[in-house]
Amino acid sequence: MFNKRTKIKVLLSGEQIGQEVTVMGWVRTFRNNQFIALNDGSTNNNIQVVAELGLLGEADLKRITTGASLKVTGEVVASLGKGQAVEVKATAIEILGDSDAEKYPLQPKKHSLEFLREKAHLRFRTNTFGAVFRIRHSLAFAVHQFFNDRGFVYLHTPIITSSDAEGAGEMFRVTTLPLENPPTQEDGSIDFSEDFFGKSTNLTVSGQLEGELGAMAFSEIYTFGPTFRAENSNTTRHLAEFWMIEPEMAFHDIEDNMNLAEAFIQHLIRYAMEHNAEDLAFLDQRLAEEEKSKPQAERSELGLLEKLRFVVENKFERITYTDAINILLESPAYKKKKFKYEVSWGIDLQSEHERYLVEKHFKKPVIVTGYPAAIKAFYMRMNDDGKTVAAMDILAPGIGEIVGGSQREERLEILEKRMSDMHIPAEEMSWYLDTRRFGTVPHAGFGLGFERMVQFVTGMGNIRDVIPFARTPKNCEF
Ligand code: 4AD
Ligand code: MG
Image (cartoon, rainbow, N blue to C red; front, side, top):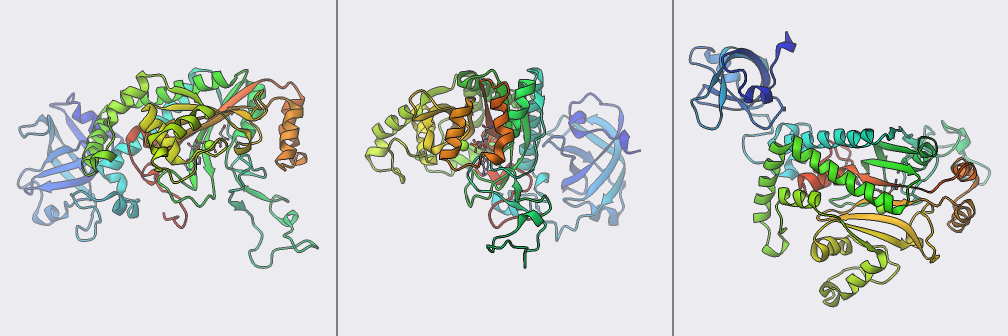
């Protein structure tokens, strides 16, 4: 019986005029005891259900409240009213689930994003989050399409790991040892040989190292999975649990890597523009309204759709880290002491620096290469200058770093030297070094932060609003 249901998106196309259909969804509004705006999440547009006088008794009419779920059968007719082309003239309405109007948190009015974050279990039912999460879905689908079309193998890398890929040490421990009285060694330290895996383990910060193993057999792989970072960053760009896409390609150098990353980002945007035009138009409008409440100087020059079109149609700027530092040192912002953090060759670019480069200086996405070796991970390929590595970060307007990647160090001796300089235990990483021992090849890869990409495409300012249930410091609801 339920599979006879017609989705509202399909109904609104108008092809079913004259037919009898069954629709199901949740009530958004109910006017004049007669007009029900019903939504099933297939689109932000509601179908208007007309319940003619007498169809429902007094008691049932009272049960048609915002949030209630209905099964409606009726005829699709051209609408006489304004605002919709078709409507359903109901012959039967069944109330599947009541929703107490006094208690239902979502009222038919505009709620703040902060309020909706507290009600994240219900916010999917709003227009903004409906649009955001349909686009998120499309982008995920487009990720697989892009790589599948290019012959990449989707590799599922582990979630639990005993290595710290990024060497940043910001990991969540995974253990079954008792918090009170854990087994200890003679020197008093915890004895992880007693732990579940017989060693110390964590949630992964990146699937890259395992991805490299795959690339050394399949030539081209990608991962797309959750990653975890216990960094205490309470910003609009950081999550403790986020999704990352990490392609890894044999026989690719840094140039190939940049080309692929640029094409990938453009593909994702183009896919959303083609498949989510309605939702993007809604978010474009939403952002335009939000911008109006900002002071002139803080408003972005381009609307959401204009920005997306611009990024798809124009090449990304490519500069070196050294260029970036010079641009910053020459900038009015630097001269007027507007930056909070110092600028000099060797610093890790702060988000204020990245945003200056993309938003004020170039006004487009920028790929920065050739970072100082000292601020980058051990696996990045050393450049001939002996000081910089073949790293590439992509910086996006409004977001900052959206991609981090590099050509990898494929030369065993240089890699071993780098690891020992950085105090990375080579014995535990012997499996990784084996790729350099047996048939090593030039290779490269990158990681795209999926939520940052969703933010970029939807124009949502806070990363908590583009993942269904955000995990951030001191916050793990739902
Ligand atoms: O620059 P990151 O740390 O690079 C890596 O993990 C490499 N192993 C990737 C690779 O070469 N295969 O992270 C990659 C991207 C960042 O550019 C950012 O977009 C995103 O992951 N990211 C985060 N997104 C949300 N919350 C966080 N805490 C993030 N940390 C990184
Ligand atoms: Mg990075």
